[in-house]
Length: 190
Image (tube, rainbow, N blue to C red; front, side, top):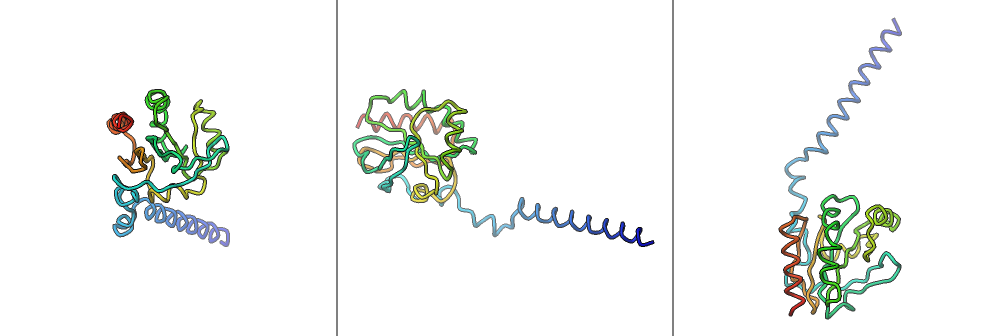
């Protein structure tokens, strides 16, 4: 009799545990309307907008050197925030070497990709796996990113020769990528 009672207790305990897990998963996957409204839209999360002066920063590069945005005056800069775990970031980076870096080589232009919130070892493994050799910045603590935005990647900030943001964009799609290329060409010619 005690055994039957123990089995019944174990069964009830298991059912209660499953119920708690299901409720927790539901709460995480389907937040309340108030919780959903707390996350800013991409526009709200963008701190630096078109026409604004780009905040100066210093970022450590993958090779150990540092780059200061203020030192890049006179060049058009495409500042790109990305992460190894982000599928749209990876899709965008796959096009960069041929369509941006090689295309504007030797001109007053710099593509400055900055990995947001990742350790150097993570970026190193990603670079090796993908075969990337172009310079990359490391924003391991997210400090540089926090000057420009609150959330969402990839993000691009096209900065003109005077340090002003010409275009701030969120996400990646082919049309937006093509628009960035046209804007880079236009800004280089100025």
